[in-house]
Amino acid sequence: MSELLVDTNPLPAGISGRLRDQLTFLIEVDRLKTVLRQSPLAAAPRRENDAEHSWHLAMAVVVLAEHADEPVDVGRTVQLVLVHDLVEIYAGDTPLYDLAARESQQEREEAAAARLFALLPADQSQRMRELWDEFEARRTPEARFAKAMDRLLPVLHNWMARGGTWLAFDASADHVREHTSSINEASATLGTARDHVIAEAQRQGWTAG
Amino acid sequence: MSELLVDTNPLPAGISGRLRDQLTFLIEVDRLKTVLRQSPLAAAPRRENDAEHSWHLAMAVVVLAEHADEPVDVGRTVQLVLVHDLVEIYAGDTPLYDLAARESQQEREEAAAARLFALLPADQSQRMRELWDEFEARRTPEARFAKAMDRLLPVLHNWMARGGTWLAFDASADHVREHTSSINEASATLGTARDHVIAEAQRQGWTAG
Ligand SMILES: [Ca+2]
Image (tube, rainbow over the protein chains, first blue to last red):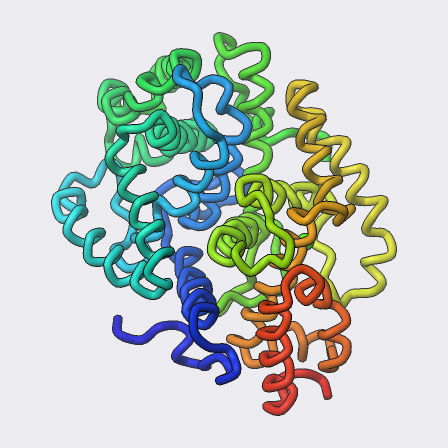
């Protein structure tokens, strides 16, 4: 845990100060590409990683923002989803339907945030922390819509996988509805689409009852 | 080539119109996670895919935008990098140092853009096309900075790999400088950092002379 990726091959000494800290951070966050989620890809028989998931969320924000019930600033919402999973670099992914892991989640992610964001210059460290806090607190329209996207894409992935983590974690249709209610809270239109997908998945036997 | 991902499991009939088109597009772009680049990850012994690369570029824009010689709109620059590689879903990645593949690149990517963006409602299709065209044309500060990030991250990855694609494609330090000049054109500060990395890589034997 104590070594940074860049420590295995330090940058040339001519790169110093603020920029050296920024490049150290950008190299370190390469680790997000190795954090596996439970979700199966639609395009290949393997699990998704957090970096490609974060990109997909950003695309979803750009394409679906018009359906937000409260108007959202697309640029800021995109920044929220880009950084929302960074803490998992050290804290790991906590599956939605793994209730045991979810108990220790906050403590693990708090420690990870402190460690990771400290690599940046102080002003940027604080800015990253603010984005992460905003996403977690869901007190702005942008954070609520970002969270809705974070729940919607796994619904689409599980639909494409004909069950995916719904079956793997033995989640009933009601359980899925409960854990994806943030979609309906942010967008009536997307909530209705979610309802159609879950109802049809249940009919097909792709949820656990 | 003719089947869309969603055709293997069509969405419920209750999802229609504009939203159905948007979700079809969002499912289809899952394919970007399967397009492999030549670049090695810093965090694991495997090649990078386009989706995680696009996320990493977006992070680089957020963290390094202050170094742009011309002020850039961070939100728009992020959108440029999020969409810049989408055409590779059908056209494939064209390695920087593969000169043969680069000859047919424009034609292949043009056909891919027509096919992929047509999945979206007309206004969004046009918007995606405009973002891609803006990135490609490099006529705005945002597009120039986005391109600089697209050249800078592979420099960092090759540095971390002690050679990476520089050695794999037999690229001399001068060749690398030529192909990454867009970094120096967008940012004197980042250009100087690039110079340090390439000079030290050459000394270490991590470029082909
Ligand atoms: Ca590319």
